[in-house]
Image (tube, rainbow, N blue to C red; front, top):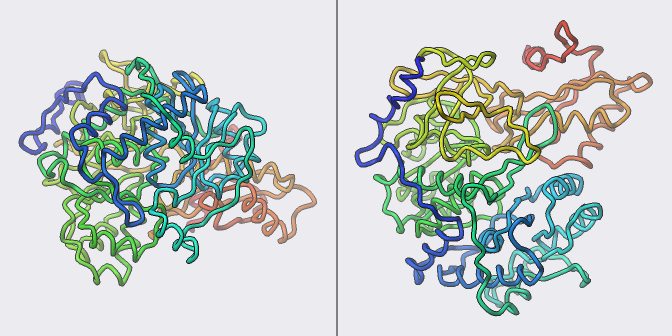
Length: 560
């Protein structure tokens, strides 16, 4: 495509009436827009958590108190605080409370092992971690060699009315664990309740100060820390809102908050475009499918951001026909490619069309979305307002003609500052703009709609989670039982991709019991969603002329 075609934004003619091509981005930090939302919606319902409602005024009070408490622990601008929590009201308070001190959040997947927690804490330089009591043991084990000085503990039921909390514990619905008191242990509700005075309001440089260190990565190493500034995330919030504004009633929507908050998709779309615009979040700490479907109906949910594997599960569940989902206005799919079969099945049983979008952590994350009134099957949509996108030759970075298949590149205010380690290979300058290489192979049609072809990087998408083959291969190779290893994803309509490892055993470890031993090792070292579903022993792996393992050839061999 000529660069002129890209720069013209041909896709903008498909925006809904009233959607501006360029979005004015306010010169405000994330805490600034949170405070403004609380001021404008003080008495309105902000959150429904475990069937209990909380107002914006309550959130504001708790966030301010936590910010003051963190300041008393010497957390300030330039520091990093890790948040290891499931979706909960505590996560929201922690997220905005940390940012209000001027510090940076680094959200950690609650499924992480001690080894994974240690890596993220060390890499990010976190000084404090906020977590659940049931995670205390693995956190304590993880932080011995990190800079973490304080562990702040909460229980999932800490914000429930006392009677409901007591009953929940008796019935086993609110898990808990005893945590010893110690010099480095603090308790979430205690420090908030004791906090006095106004929280500090340090000046935040929205262009340069990091709001979120989001861990992601490719197949050539361990996860990298993506530096997302306040401007990156605020810009993406306003871009998303601009795109869907004609189809919603701002401040009157109910969001299904199931997407994990530790992921930037959940932070920007739900905590940002949802909460900050005065809407209500219906929070689910975990997926219980029938309860989830029932609550969509019970609370008249209107906005439902999800992932393909969830939509597939719902479409196949008998419960889907038992509840009224007519309140849904927008059902949005992200985090992975949406198979046509899944979209069709979901629409057949619910009467609701799924709107596919696209993004990546390095872009805060959303770059593309189908216009809700002009959805094209199999398309990831068109670039958001204030975003440009094109297709380039992955080798030369030359922009290609319309219809050509190549690497998708994007440019906009939501594109990251860079990686924490200083690497900027995925960013390049062209035509007076900074462009982000997505690593995904796509093409654009003559109307400016983009279509996903395949993942240039060998990242695996399993149940909406991003899985990095190199991390699994490191565990296998570190066992002493494996000479070579290649981990790939195999398409699976139920989970997106199954994780399969093909290994060449080391000398003296050729027996079938090697598979069992390796499986046990993966259970010990890796989160459940990262563990191989199948480990195959082979005599050799396919390689290129220079000896590089060819994962595509491995995948093809497994598929035949």
